[in-house]
Structures are given as C-alpha cells and as structure tokens.
Image (cartoon, rainbow, N blue to C red; front, side):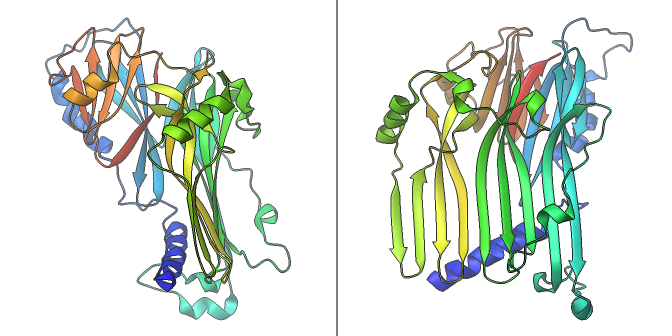
Length: 376
C-alpha cells in the first residue's frame, strides 16, 4: 500500500507539471453564456439606458489541475446583457477599473542526448529529459489596459550545485478579494524528475497596493479580537481532529495550521479561516508535500475594509431553499443577493425572496467559486 502511495505522489507531481497550462480545448461554459442570455434581452429596445451601478462578479474555475478566472459584468438592476472578461478579475479602484491578472513564466531546456525521446502522443519530453522545466503563474494587480509581466528569471529558479530540483512549478490562487486586499494561496512544487517531490502551500494576505511588491499584511492588521482564544474554540469544537500516522519511512500528519491563517468566504461573509492540512513525508525518497484540505471559520471580527455586506436573510434559509447552494453574497447599494449553485450563478434583486424564481440565472458548469462581488 505504501508503495502505491509513493507512486501516486510522483504521478501527482507529473500531472501538475504537465497540465499547468490550459489546453486550447479547456473552456468554461460562460464563453457561450452571452448567446444564451441574450435571449432574455431580445425584447429590450436599443435605446434603453441604465443609470445605476454595474454588478461585478469575479469567478474562479478549477479545471483539472489548472485555475482559470472570469469576470461577469451586469448592467445594474435592469440587468441588461452582461459582458464577460476572460482570464482576469475586474476590480473598481480609485475611480478607475483595474484587474487581477495571471502573469505566466515558462522556460525549459532539454538535454541534447535526450532529444530523440520526444513523446509524440503526449506532445512533450519525459521529465527526466529536461535540464530544467519551470512554470510559474503569479497574480498581479494592474490597470485594465495593462498586461501582466512576470518578474521571475531563470537565474532565480535554477538549482544550485547539488540540488536535483530541476523541475519547478508555482501557482498563485485567489481565495478572496475585498475593498482593499486580496488573499492568495501560493503553491509551489519541485522534483528532480525522479521519485522525490517537494510541494507546499502558503497563505498570504496582501493590500492591493502591496501585491506587486510582494508585501504581505501582518495578520493583526486585518481583525479585532482574541485570536488565541478563538483558535482554541475552533479546534475544540471541530468535527475533524489532529492526528499523525507513521509507518517505516512514511509519516502522514493532519493538523490545523495556525501559521497559515487567511481570509476566505464562508456562508455569505468573509471570515478569518484556519486551514486544516495534510502533510506527507517519505524520508526514504525525500518526498514531502503539504496540502490545505479545508478552512474553518475563526470567530473574530474582521476590520473595516476586509468585510462584505451582511446578507439580509439567514444563510440557512438559502441552504434550505436553493438546491446545491455553494455560496451567496449581498450587494447593498444595488440590493442584490448573488448566489452560486453547482450549475448556475443567480441574482435576486430588490427584495425578491422567491428562491425558485431568480431575476437572472447564468449557467456555470464545473468546479467554480466566487472570489469577488462588487459594484461600480
């Protein structure tokens, strides 16, 4: 069984590396939503004008081992045909429209002696054929018309002498965006192309202005309350518990990671989240990986600027009446409840509480999450 686990760990690393860039045939269904949703506006006159705020919804989609982003813009409470922005999260800031965009860095070098081992079926070389193979995806904050450019260099990533980690992969994943901050999960993985794998996840919270300079906020800057007391409460009352298993060269630990507290969405609000992680170590082949499995709400109050508007109804009411509910958030100025289910994004406007009759429904397929809701 342990041999199987070791093989699975290596296969996971290979999968992450070989699929870190989206293929051309990977598409989120919102690509075709505009055609579908335009039917709802066929009867509207071309001279219809809106005077309120636009509703902006930023979505994260997980496709295989990749993460894609989409922004949907609805024209205020009249909800005229929406616009879709691919691969970015739009964000109104300082009277202008900004965006969070992925800056990608790729570089590879193949051993000359291995060039005849190119796999025509896979469309690439086996991992052991590379002198180095780097892929990093960084989230950056820019004006809408600017393009993200990675600041990474080959020199920064090239292994030092004696270091066999010549395959490196990294990815920033947006967890939540608020008025003046963004929380990210930064994932990195390296392998020498053999059985050794190193993978790690780290949570960071940035002010928007500090993101590009990699200046993370200190945790005490984002909340009020007694954190130590709140952590004890979470750990004592949680259904999952900490545990560690050891068998020969293998150690498998499950625990609450108090060093990686971050901000996440939870039942209609943004909260401080305590990660529950799995950390796997194989001292025989040098494999070590850490993955965040879930987040628990820490009962402290976020400071102003890190909160979202409180839902006007109990979250439990939504759970009881909306099938396969995933997330729900409230936009106070437009009086809109934004709801994400397993297969649709729904809006309930101006006090609409007929949960089976949303004012707008947009098909969303796949594993998707709301990372931002706002008005502009």
